[in-house]
Image (cartoon, rainbow, N blue to C red):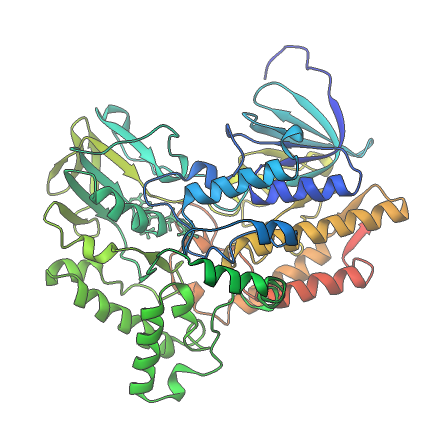
Length: 537
Ligand code: NAP
């Protein structure tokens, strides 16, 4: 604690934390309500996850025509995407375009990391303090911190002794990183690793991949997006968006209504082949029971295992790359370009950490139990303290000085993923126990922002200044979410969805698995029923 006299606080209606997809749209809606707001953003630019994740090969695996805002018809008609799946630079250009087009920058403060948010019950105001020493007072705090923004570099002894440079995919430098002629090590084979490994292999002299768990990945078959295909989609943009909002994931996949076990082996294989040839996460919707029935799931898992065996020439390497420890889709399905084939390249080596764990990092590279791997650079593709991490890194104090991080020590507890009991006037966009990372997150963001903005409008109309939820509402929502989760296979994987990637993190399914369409209907019904479970003053 500094003894310096605190700076006088600015007073606002709302402080929004984060200038990614969520923060920008929230600001736009707040302005529409005539509310004063400021967005505080740690980065040097807008974009959130798409600002930080500029690693080689970074790309979204929701298709371009669907991974964008729908709130403005002119915006969605005028923007042109160049590829089937948008690359990180293209998404960042799009977000910057949105910031300019809606004149958002004048209320966005960059290079400002929020340190704490403390609620004063008597004055019904939040005080938000930043690492830069600023204090702001606001009636509402709206978290737009993102679900995958608290990057995690695992504890590895000796990292500080490494003589080369090291990087984390989620915190990549904005100046060019050139791996030409270098010996590079990549730790981690989740979505980020699986995207960056083929890209780094194209540059590096030598690439060593350190894999703890193999993952299932489906080819993206990315390519240019023709003007005709784009125009055809735009002609029905509004209808496509409306339909997407009613689906489980906010994405227009082909959702099957058949069980994998209800069709013949030939039919099943043909369906998997068709979906593999089409590419992307649509694969996991080939049958309607893949997330619920272990036998059904195994048919899809085995199909992909056979594909891996068919692509990777060395059977020993193929065996190491073949996942057998979780049902397919219960860890986030990966979507790749040339991932498995990369292991056929002579300068690419796979080290299985299950057989040969990392002992320490040494100046010249990584020492495993069996060998010292000499490296010039290390890339951590080791993921995030997902969904709760970024919120818990802020010292948030609600009623009676209660700490959000402490309250959530045994797992996050929210009502609808929008608010926790004891933290009035604090909304969490894509907060824990909302559909968030199980969906096209832009669609979930718009749904949350619209719901929050409508709620604020309702409060304005009634002359209310204070909204809270209570333990009974939270308890009901948590019980409902857990009940649905227990009917799925998600509990069978050590995934970040369950917090299993962070030592000591409680095992709770962090996103809501009931589906975005159903969830939206519940939120709308809560609002229509006088905001059931919320109290106003
Ligand atoms: P991730 O899925 O959590 O993968 C992290 C990888 O690092 C895993 O292979 C993990 O192994 C490994 N790892 C973690 N700690 C380790 C340790 N101490 N030693 C060795 N290995 C370790 O993280 P991510 O790849 O960054 O992806 C996170 C999420 O971001 C994705 O699931 C997705 O939702 C999103 N994302 C999306 C895209 C896209 O749209 N294409 C791209 C990137 C990220 P274990 O499996 O054994 O834990």
